[in-house]
Image 1: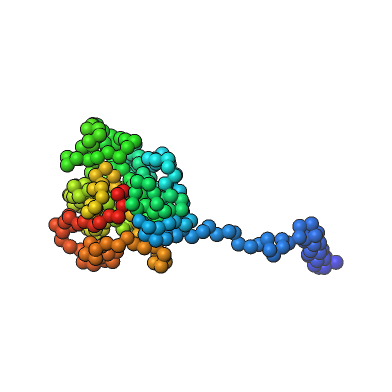
Image 2: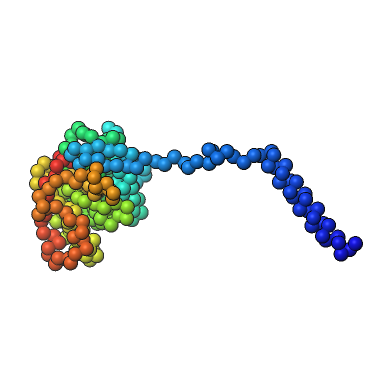
Length: 283
């Protein structure tokens, strides 16, 4: 009997377990097959047409935060996820580096794109206006509510106690051209601001490929506003949308070639050579 006891106990245990499973099955039947379907997938964001004649699908909205403020409440704060993400990342990156810094963002696009009053572009979710970054008399970050025009000395015309800060503004440009989730196509800005930032970047010993990318991206429009009070950043068409997303036409010799960043870099002096490109929008 002692030798059989373990066997009897094992059999009894199996029997009880099987019985419990049967009772649980009767109480909670398996879910029906149709209830196991996939979760709904968010629509793919699409930039359709060009920045001057386009529309937007599946846009995401840029939300204000401690590090980022929206200049207008006109509803034009939508864009491709890549653009919105890049702005949010750059705001957090700069705020962690410069105490009290706030990024002021103007218009992006409407939720469905299309014509936006006051602009000739901003129609396809790839454009955003961002104010310059200033410091006060003591070198502290200041947050003007409006875009401020910068003179040749870097002083704000609307408030001469505010000074255009090379370190902060270059850090913003550098964060954009090195962003892992977006590829910057253009940064429209006045030529004197462009040269100022490139000169600062060279003096601080910026990694040459980054300096080259910034030099290629920044340019003063040859028509419309010169952009001496804000940056107008435009990202490239998303991958896989070549048939729907259209890059604004420009003269071949002035077009930014994405592949050029993989070529042999020019001399340091060439990196600050003036480059212009016609901008299709006033802002």
